[in-house]
Length: 201
Image (cartoon, rainbow, N blue to C red):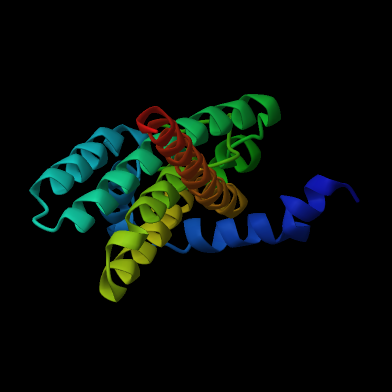
């Protein structure tokens, strides 16, 4: 028994959960899986950045505008961190994707991919979106964000692109990147404030 069996294979539950989701999904839900795979893609990052920027300049409350700008900076930093970390992990681990492991037993939506399964980039990005917007929205908005992240993760398994463990790893990486980016932003702001204070004094 090795670390991969416990941490990634979950004692066989990783593949079992994959089959339950991927094989048990009605074909009528294929468009839903395709849609959430699309909106959970890294390429939608510029849209979120643009949306946050637009929100920050249109907010009538200065405190609200400042809060949105902070989330904009946090998301930008977190996105860069997550992209670098996810790319490094994919190349270093090179875990096979479901079609490479299970062959014809996998229901694939789109072109099948064989390599770089861990972590799921889509799930990583979904967690980044949740982390960026979480402090800015209320209870209903947070429920919608959780629902969005869950559906993006589900879509990657349903589409035959990732195992559930890849999705969980992506969520963890995205959340960690947001937390680290928040600390970096706070440190940069503190240093900038100290510098301005020193110059004015």
